[in-house]
Structure formats: C-alpha cells, structure tokens
Length: 85
Image: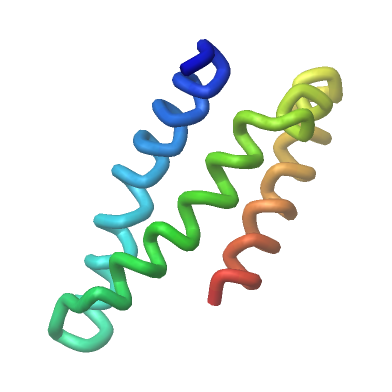
C-alpha cells in the first residue's frame, strides 16, 4: 500500500467515524429505532467527502483564498448531501 492510499484510508475512516454516528443518531431521533439504513446513509455521506478531501479538488482549493475555498467546499458538501439523500 502506498503512502497516498494509506492517507486516503485514514481520512475515510476518520470521516466515517463522524458521519456514521451522526446518521444513526438522526435516525434514532426521527424514528426511535436504529437500523442498517442509518449505517448505509452514514457511509454514503462519508465516502464522497473522503474522496473530495484527498483529491485534486482539495489541492486546487488550497491555492484559493480562504473564504473562496470555504464557500466552494461548502457548496460541494451540500451538493453531496443532496445527492446522498
């Protein structure tokens, strides 16, 4: 495994460690139960975010002014949320 692949896996795991509990919590609050659907939604949200954080997109965003990069990433993340749901 190359260093880039290992870094991508670490990033993906860290993002999933946040997305999965959040989606399970939201499902529990909404329905009162926890099911596999919450787990799938958490993974479906985490993978595009991990791909974006370790891609050429992220390298391009680092070259932009801070506020422009935050705005562009926010739009991209909201777009991925819309697609996932």
